Image (tube, rainbow, N blue to C red; front, side, top):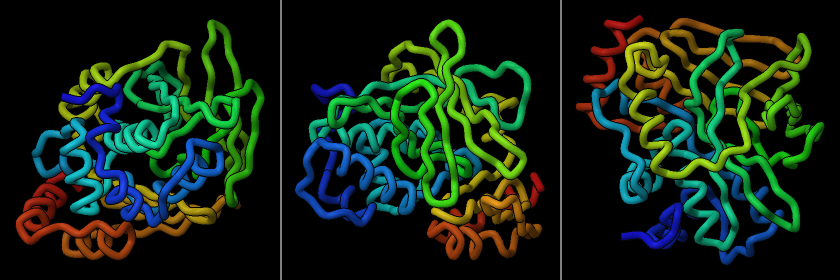
Length: 276
């Protein structure tokens, strides 16, 4: 049984660092935090394939390591940020969990279903999130009202609303847009277990009804949502094409570095064909 909040004491840190291509030993400072955040985002794609394969999404550290480190798969927010939090905790960072309402793509009120993190480094707090997918940050953002930062070709900002709510925003070709909003309440691993159950099983969850795979680098955001594969650049230019079931495995492999076994490929192709 782990004695640490994020189970960092159970993490194989060397294997994780090898997975993201970073050398140790590391100190709990801003330089390390930035490097880990950027390398994690570059190495581990956002994906919901376990849900599509009809398997449960497990959040214990053993399962997270087996999936995303040993089998070199990806995951969505609870998986990615839980693994990241464990690695940070193991190195000596103070990590606080937060819960967010996603605003991107809707003007309506959504439930709190996104996991993000607040991390202390070099005497300041930083918003960290390696699990938001296509429009996610590459690096930590200062946890200060009005903070803005350019990360590669992308820009992010943190705005404050009433009742202690903060909003992460990104600069798109048509102006600033909200990504998600979060309150000041601390969230804990048990909270994400509840959120994860809704996200991975509820019929209204977008992760249940279609394949979602995403990854961002400094210049291009790559997304596969349903059958549409899209490359988006900061200037707003978009390249897109429809992906058939026969192409899916190759797109996952070459576009996102996801390797599936033969049984998984066959199962996913059947599900994909029925939903696109």
